[in-house]
Length: 316
Image (cartoon, rainbow, N blue to C red; front, side):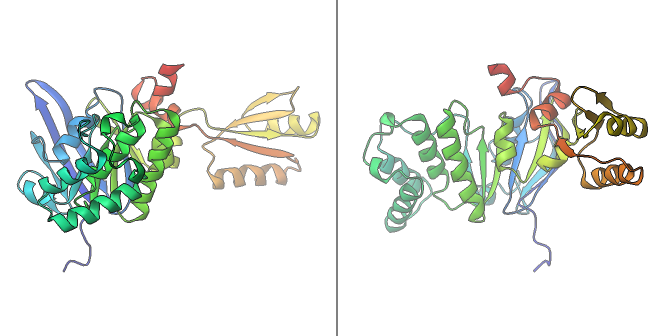
């Protein structure tokens, strides 16, 4: 046995073209097992195309992708036994009841009757659908259908779950309910690969984030690391009086506000940088009353990297 188990997902130089149009262009990704990984990108960036390749629904034009060490093209049957997929559009049959949808999924996975019953009961309870189990899914709210859709994708106990913009069209309460479900999945040890256009969603859920634009990964890191990529981060220093403000302004490059007794200094908010600045002012005998760190959010990052408005900005 290898001392280093394979990552949940390893993508190397992956490309996908339709005719002369390259939808994905040399994608490299590595997703650790048991984490939530979020792929951000505007419409048309290639998010769904990438998910389809990883879920064995489409073949790459170049490069390779492996799920727990198994090639998605050469070992598609093995990969399908390891994954679950919830797409942008619900796979729920609205004519069937919630329980019938789950039992149908179990039959497609070739589970025996006893196992299908146990898993259906467990998943209905887990997703708070027990009371609605015998109702037609067509009567469910949008949030309930999404939870049922996700429950169906978990019937086979997948090790990695692909969620392609799962909260699109949901109201804020339903969206946050689904966030709780995703958090529980990760807490139970599942690997979650989430695509979204909602910056807050990625910030709330993801351990690591990659930004996809025009078929290329333009940035990757933790939410905190990505926020440091956007311009606009600064420290706001507040002083007790005008002499202290004037002394600080002479020592440090920044924008002084005499009326508010503040000095705005460009900064990424890193602790070492803040400490060095305060130590420098202390050595000069300048007392700082208050320090506020302003770090760009993921909306700023998204706009800086892609040049496109976020969902929040579109709504506004």
